[in-house]
Image (tube, rainbow, N blue to C red; front, side):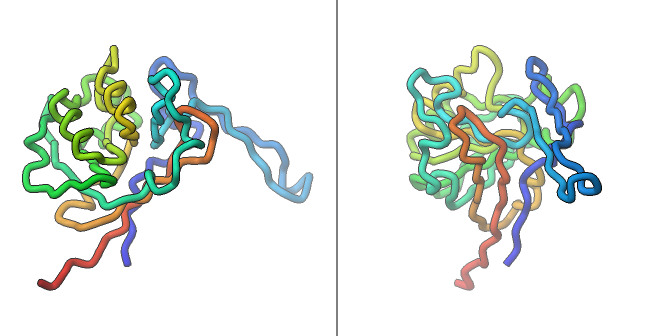
Length: 209
């Protein structure tokens, strides 16, 4: 069985959204002095690979800690949207998307991760695509870029209001091309509007028929 790690490494050098503080990693105890190593982190919940919950932009919306683990796991679909500036429903042609599935959209933008341009001019999800995904009843939308839209974040708000979680800043999506897979994207169980997430795809064996 093969697994693909879809998560960017998070460290003190991981870039944050321009308006957010940079992450800080610090030592609490030293192995030589205290006999054990312990460290801490101070960072925005939206740094690196993470999941947005409805509370991020919806008044009264659920926090991650209030969401059942089943919503973080499901059959995956990969849409190849490389080269598109605005991403519409055409990228899903031929996909049998069912309620509870997880749709990942590959824009190719992850190659810019760590560069200033990463947060500038990335592809956006169209309103038609957002409406289609919500109508399909997917549990989560994942992207290899900072998010599905720019201010005033109308796509963010629409998807979160429809209980579609948003998994941002993914990596290695090209490894899923022509594969059948499941997505396991488990955020830390924080009572928060978002949290760092280890996102993994489990490659499935294809049916012989």
